[in-house]
Length: 398
Image 1 (cartoon, helix red, strand yellow):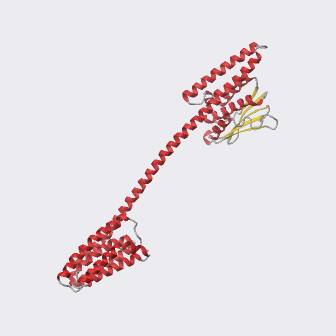
Image 2 (cartoon, rainbow, N blue to C red):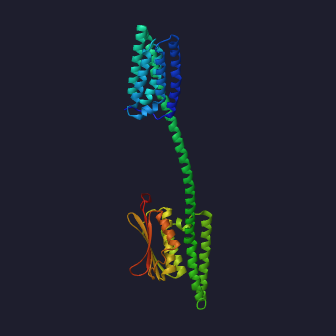
Image 3 (cartoon, helix red, strand yellow):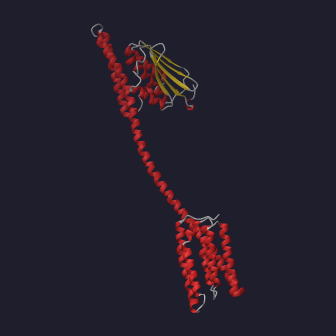
């Protein structure tokens, strides 16, 4: 099957070469024929005109049918052979095979192109031997080399143009990719800002919000105790002052460093012990703490999430549960650690306590680590917050 190049640049170069070679052959040949008053001079003029017209219509002829290239090359070859046969047998017409050799490599496979060049060489050989005898054999290799040269030159020109077109295409794709990366960078920056805002909001809620909630409860209790137990009320106010002072310190750390508070850097057992003890002291509620002894080494982000889960659970108990006792349990399985914070209070009423910002922030924090947080009522009354985090191979084992 003939193969056609899509290189417009190569075809344009070929057209220019053809429109230069045809008159370069026709003018001296016709000049000699008219000077010698050859009877075939007008026929030769018509053949040159026909060759030029067919050459100009090459793309239409070649593209009209699958056999179009063969029709075009065969017709042009027949015209050249006829010119060679006209009196007085002007052999300069074989130069037109240079054009056909270049065209052949643009239309055919290398094997078919070689066959056409061999045919052109054979016709040249016959023409020179017929006109000049054996002496004409000396000129044939020169023309054969010219046919091969024009074919190779056209082929290399087409390849170079295809490479240039491919480079331009890759450049356009690279420019488009660069613009896309710029857009992605802008989106990533905007997303990072939004994520940082959400993180800060969670930090503010988990730290200052927790301490202010506990302080508010203590102040209410102290207000009720002032008439009957002023010393106990003063002690509770002193505890509130400590809570507020610690909250201010945490706020300064958050704003100054945008990092987790000091509890997240502690081992979980002492961090949770400190949290539950402070909660018991502030609220008077009994908190039962149970931390497994076989916990693996956790990442800071995992410890932070567990600590915030315990903090959020106790805060919700204080706000909504009306409970007398609470339980904080941290356990592990083969592939996860689980934090359970439950109480013996009134349980969940409607969706109370399920749609707050603190729970949403906790779920976001846990989801980023591949875990989940679930708040639900318990069968025996009360509510429980269950937080699970998957263990990674890098966590190791104790």
